[in-house]
Image 1: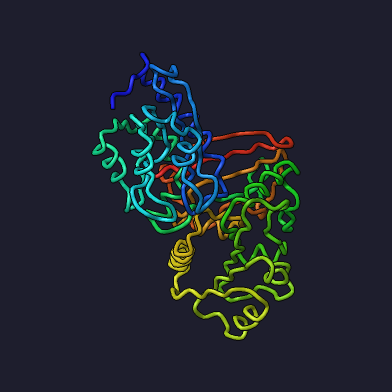
Image 2: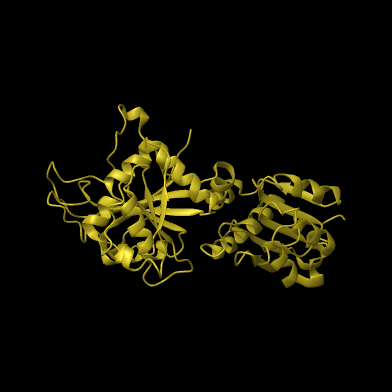
Length: 379
């Protein structure tokens, strides 16, 4: 197979890949714990001017992969064409047959891959298989964007824990509540709508018992999104009130109460009888318990977990380097007061050189607030 490439092949490849990345995002909240993947097929330059003739994306967990969806849309027109895919095609039997076999059978002449698949059963094997079949393969096109797209999947595969998103709303002077504890509502209605949309594509929402006792939250997405997240309460001594909204709704929407090793047995039985799932950590040290819990959530294949407070929980996660992404809503108000809490408590850092750096990916102004979304820089 000898594909005819357009004069500016690099620009052509990037054009295809950026469209594939757009398509991949359509699977957000639908495909986890699988990664979001998009694919496009372009006709050979000598027959179709290099135009895109088919598109596909991984639309639902267990459904056809992006490559297969695009190949099905292209039909016989795929022969001799170029396939751009955001993640290395799989070469193993999982819930679906290997995509590499479908690509070879379709007569694709050239494949552009943005990022390797970190899953051990693939991890370069798909690329090697395509090359052995005589297909030209180019890798690394828009790689940084593709790796960001699958960051939660990569975290689950490589570190066996979910991607942790810390969310908070605060005043311009960095307060999440008044000295008297009032916090509803610091952010605007539009900001709160963004949070509900985010909740609707999470696998879990985590908060501490302090937040539950203070606010009696429901921790659901309203309106419901594509996923109904597991509601997780960090509750060392199993103090979660039976009459709380979380417990009263536990039989309809699951609640996981994560307790310490010395939680009273009668409280554990009461919560279990009320419909909550009780998970008891073995570790005595709070930081070790956090790692233990995240490993448990990883074993359940939770990919994205939203942390909704409060300062103690966020501080513990930050101290343990377990925050991966931040969604911060800053209201144009000043609260003041030395006793008014800030978003992140914990031990903190001793020098500014040790401060956690955030790479800002998006800003907006919902309802007059400043919304900042970014990822934690590692290394």
